[in-house]
Length: 113
Image (cartoon, rainbow, N blue to C red; front, top):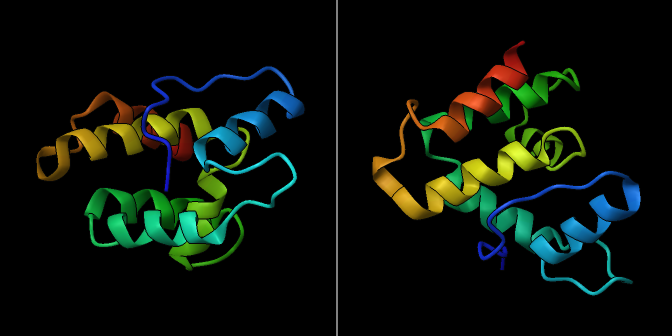
């Protein structure tokens, strides 16, 4: 589903961003982003309180309370590098992932600044 083998995400322009998203979603260049990947990520994270916090805040940028909209926003150009780090940490640490982890703190600070 989602490519957790990519350790760091960076890009300098829209074309590079699109390529990074394509690699993370394991899709072909011509394919649209697969909603199955977004659904899978949401299913895995929706009950985790820290993800609820960032999903709710991101959704609020679109005047929404829908956490799935928040998830989509976190894959946007400005948030993807930090959100990817949070996903990696959660995938690695599971239940021991907490609000003291640097990836959560960094994304939280960006969203709430």
